[in-house]
View 1 (cartoon, rainbow, N blue to C red):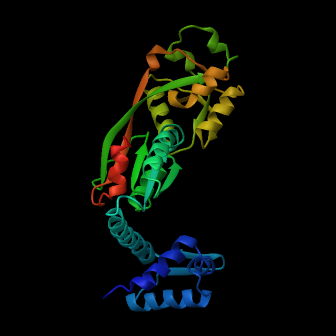
View 2: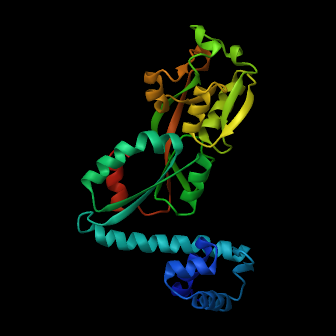
Length: 293
């Protein structure tokens, strides 16, 4: 059995777009031509790849497996093309970076700016999500390298190396009663209202582990999907939270937030850089690492 890469490329477009209509628009083909191409691929492989539904399509188990391998194939195709382009001195190419929110919003922008000034011909893409989401995108070959703040589950496909250190601090609004005290004990947080990040967030995992280590139970009052939203909620007096010190410099200067001094809850966490073991390193990525990425 030989895979027809033209048909496979059309199939991946349908898979990513979620419908024949949208895939046809992206590929500048007719919808009927796209549909025929997928049917022909299914015929050649002797299996159903897509379930046709009223509102788009969904992959079967076989379709999911084929999609995963197809993304790897086309990633290696792109890397081959980029490698040839890079022989001309990094004048063309693409670098896709994934990062959990603290790193992506607060730490990477200066590095990206410096990289762009040195290599303006390289197209840069930054994908921001929580730690779990970013690792999933790395494993599915959607990004070249990942930077995460949460623990990474053991996986033989992943190469995890330390990147930077980060301090986690408990924050409160300036008028919160606990800010009147110079030093606090972990027990002072017992049953305190807390603003939580969403499940899968590295920040949330570190927070939960730290509080559990000191037998502290807090009262979750809100769950938010970004550090910026958490900071706004805390500033409005809705509760306490724990964030990276990197994320609150401007708020501390403006007096919108305060850091609680809790010596027993001094938390240093390791930020990590993650790559796939079997993925070739492009020259664009090599230059990024030399740029202290």
